[in-house]
Length: 266
Image (cartoon, rainbow, N blue to C red; front, side, top):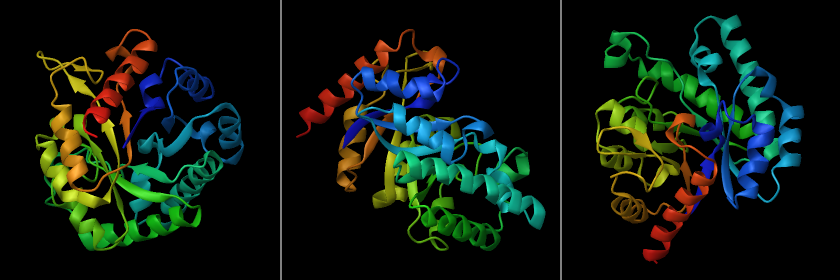
């Protein structure tokens, strides 16, 4: 396992072309790039970021998924094709960055009935997942479904269903989103198992406020042991919001904390 940081942690603090050099200067070795808008989707912006990443290894990319991901599942062919156009642009950027994984939210469960799962049509969703997976693979990236309270994987069982249609589908375990969804992260971890490609980490203090790993009460040692038990050996990516810390140096301190825990488990 190795520790990294998602540029989502710098969203609204630094643009990606400045966020990557910042993380590199902090001595962070691994990153996820959170592409924030349409102007950042495409080969040319990917090349710009690649020229500025320094020694950073970019493991995965993420996008502002509400901009087009839900429309990838549309039954309206024109809507769907437009969405796939933008998916391919994101893949272009990811390929230029050398990313191997695409962190995916998928559909948006904005309505109560949708969140309950009662309206889920798994064969229809699965057909879309298969097509999305193959498109990503054409660019050398692996589609990885993240557990997110308001998106496709908002409850246990969904990942297992989607694996039927995309057997090589990867999983992204997000500790924060597990807590928000009301499910124990251990259950998500168990369901994804050896399919986990990377993990999004944050902490929580005694008042329930999100904070950087090492600043709260989350049992990281237990998490790391459980990940090790399922054979996980990928990136542990710090992903918090801009107001969850004061200075960028604190990102490095949090990464150091996690690295010390990893060392203690050897």
